[in-house]
Each structure stands twice: as C-alpha cells, then as structure tokens.
Image (cartoon, rainbow, N blue to C red):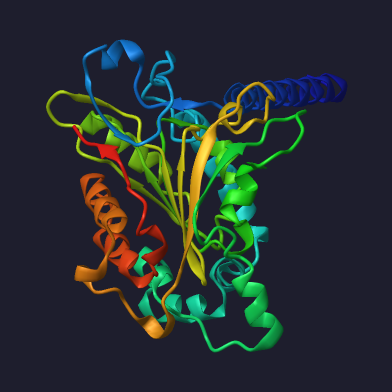
Length: 346
C-alpha cells in the first residue's frame, strides 16, 4: 500500500467518525426537544373519580376536568426519565466551570444558611418551621412602614382573578397574591397543576415550598418524590386517600412572610387558564392577611377563633407537617372572629 492510499483511508475514517458524532448530537437534540414542552398535571380523572366518589375539598372548588393522570414515566415537571438523565449529564459537564459550592449556597440561602451548612453538612437547609418563627429584628420609621404596607387585606376580601384583555376592576393576579419578594414559605393545595408555570412565579432559591397533592397510589407517590428530589426547597405532602376517597379538590394557599401569614382560598387551580392568562376564565378568591404576633408570642389554644380551629383541623386532615400547623398560633387570628372556614373531608 502506497502513501496516497494510506492518506485516503485516514480521510475516510475521519469522515465516518464525524458523521457518527453528528448523528448522535442530532438524536440528543431530538430527545431534549421531545420533553421540553410544559405539561399540566391532573391528579385524577373524572372517570377514575366516578360520580359518587367521596372527595376532600375546601369551601370553594372548580368542576373536575376530564384530563387523565400523566403516565408514570413522567416526572413532576412533565419530564421523562431519559430527559432527566440527559440533564444530569449536562449538569455534570458544566460542573467544572460552575462557581464554588459556597458561592452558590450564599446566593440561595444567604450567609447565615451557608454557616449552617458548614456546621451541619452540605444538605442542611432551613425547615418550614424555622421560616415561620419570629426572626424579625426591631425596625424603625420608614422601614417599619414599608413592612406594614405588605399587609393589604387585614379584614379579608373577596376578589376575582385577573383576566387578560379585560378591564381591571376588583381583580388580582397570582403574582400579586404571592408577594414573591418577601415570600418565605408557601403551601399550595390544588387539583390541577402546571408546576413549570408556578415555579416562574416564585423565587425557589429563597422560598420553602410545600405541594399538597391528592395522589392515591403508593407507587405514584414514590415516583413523584423521586422526581422532585433534586428541586431545591420543595417538599411534597400526600393526604390520606384511603377507602373510597379517589379525588382531592382542595384549593388552598398558606403564604408566610416576615410580617404576616396570607391565607388564600381560591376557586382556581394552579394552571395559567384558571388565573386568567388566556383571557377566557375568571375565578374568585378569598384572601386575608394575619399579622405576626410580636416577640415570638403565640395565641393560647382557648383563644383561637372558630375559623382558626377549623383551619387547623383541615390542615391535620391534609397530613401537613406538624410544625407548620402549630405555627398558625404565631399569628393574630382576631380578624377571623366573624368568619368560618368551611370544608368537607372524606
């Protein structure tokens, strides 16, 4: 074999290698594009629930949609397992150029949490109960006035949800409900979920998040927990769905801030359509801001209003974390004296 033949063989081998690499890259891009679309999570279909099924619901709830549960291969964000593995490998490749872990932790949790991670291990993070504790410092003048202004509905209010393209009259957007910049802990209960969309409304780096999801099958619960394990600051809560309970329509938000606890009871699911972003749907919410008691004080059990007692009873039925339930007493419930929290369980 002469030198020219050898050169031709080398060129051919290089060309085949480049074609193979290009084919693999195109396949990877195709796999990612197939899973990049956002999905809405329906926790149960009408067919599964049945017309006579028992339900758990708060005092306001929407009609049951007919969309069925996503396949179990899908994750909580609508991503399948193959896509998650592709993303994991991408993150691993990026790690060599990422900032040091201490810098990323500082952006997520603040310097105090970085010190806590150093003492307790890199997996340490503030718990919901810590975020509900009175950690405020004495404030004066303008700063105190700014914090107090965040309490917008001290006596409670009923509002309709904003609808795109319509005049704004006594309405409210989800962003205005959440008060994202000061939100420390958010507990969400819903029937339908668009998790991708919801996470764009929240700063998941600074807000602890709890999803209360009505999932009946143990295998599905395990799958959701596994798929959400890598999402920072997210915990899942699964109410009891034993016996004839096949559906949970409860829609509730507990939004904890430094100055107050905002309780929201909406008719809207956690999807863009229900919050007016298509301009075709209008829902209603009840919203009230309960001021945090000063100096770590708590309300004696005997002084908790009927509204507060029924709320606590309902939260226990949802199997919510005990520390979150007990923290309700750290807020002034007196404005709920003339109100009732109406619910149905089972």
